[in-house]
Image (cartoon, rainbow, N blue to C red; front, top):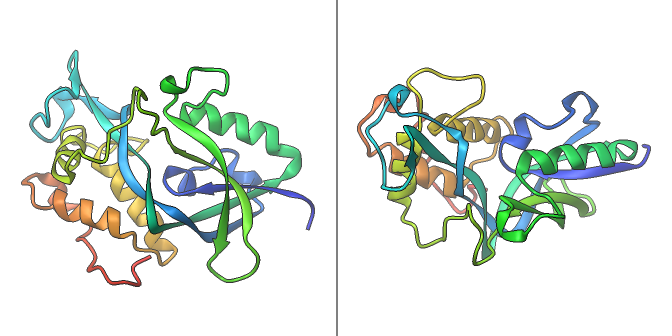
Length: 228
């Protein structure tokens, strides 16, 4: 096979990559040392208050009638791992694909670090089917102390669930917003036989809240040591 450049997706990049028609291979793989977390404040994943299907969530997430939501990121966690997809492109497209994904993820190597939503990093991932590890680019949460968009790990799961619920529109939109973003990622993982325990704990927390999402969210999966 000709030379490839590898990107590791763990959220919306898995189901909606840049230049999807150019992806040569999709490979389930594991990245060690981090786990998924809804920990990035996001206006793009939220909605107007008048179309939301829940009352306002925690204070500070509504501005001018718009409810901000959360986007999926990562959290450094020794001993943890998360499973995602390696998207392999022809190496001739590396510059184009990386630039497009940088823009999508709010990463600019020329910008101040605190203004970036994510940071691009080169990581080693392990294909689930065996074989040698791959070197891939991925976009990790910007955990710098003064990062503008980052939620610290101390924010309770219940607050994260309430933020997502409050930013969910009553009618589905072309781009998954609020809780529908959570469901989109869960569905993509399930299609590859993957259950992420951190997302399932968040889903279980959401399902303790009263709201119309209880009619369309998939029940939280029972967790085992083999969940990921």
